[in-house]
Length: 153
Image 1 (tube, rainbow, N blue to C red):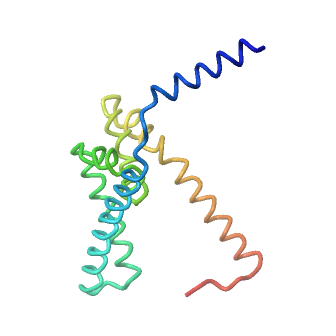
Image 2 (spheres, rainbow, N blue to C red; image 1 turned 135 degrees about the vertical axis):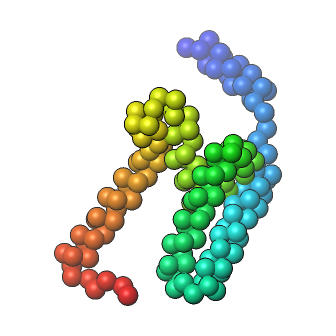
């Protein structure tokens, strides 16, 4: 039993010696700057759509579609993975990161065909998110219906 503890302690020291230091401050700063930049670009689109006559709700929808399209295009060009490599969650968390998680597997498996490759693999990562969103919205709708809560206008 003591030899086992000694081996574990030696392994822990060896592991600590060879594990590179994580630049937490740098990673947090890059996530903040790049994630904030993505959100600032989205706000520019939102202002543009609102200024050109769309209601705030429709401008928000158009902004989401535009940011998803840009994220998908950058993924197809191989650039979004570099953004995520530098930004970490700052690149993964916005909606453009969601489009990246849908487009990347689709591109990777496109040689297997449209149905078994692109169609089947496209929602491998994003599928649980879509499923959870659908189930959560159904649950909230059921609560509104059961308790006769008036819908917000």
